[in-house]
Length: 222
Image (cartoon, rainbow, N blue to C red; front, top):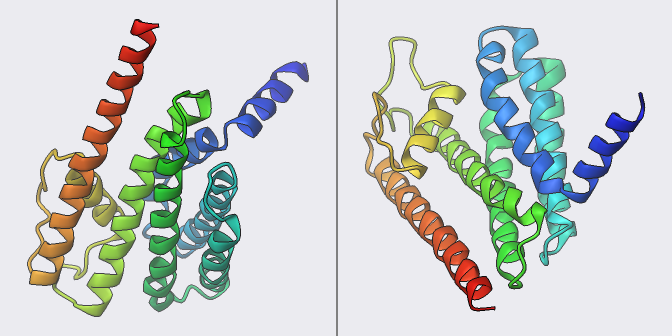
């Protein structure tokens, strides 16, 4: 009976990038349930703390300095913890700023992790997906900050500013180059960041495809 949980724990211990990727994909399914109620927003903050901790854990497997990620994560976690107990929505933009920096740092560190040798481990395969989701989250948090600093950066709804889920959806569609749907950048600053994300998405996909093709060609020659 205990064999399966032990194996699962052992697998995720060896592949922290897989655990991070799983948590973020789970968040995509859970976020819609957390948006409109006070308990939901508290759960959103708690879940954000969990993902931050998993990101810091995953960075430990990369060549980047893990203590830097801790310095960035601590204020973000503190702000999220305050939001959990106070339901202070005005702090969301502040915590989003720290989270964006951490996710960008984690994404770059995992890219270095994938490229540091010619061997592709199981964890590095999961890192391919984790980097994509980290970039999507990072840009979504940038949009949260931008919307707070410059209201009206995106086409608004009758209720006002775009929600977190809408901005995350926008980030995913831009990064994957599948279109902008019904959410459009309006201000010049929003459009400039959207263009940067479009470039990042194309560059990342091209980089991953090129690396996989080159590694496959190297194995074929051997």
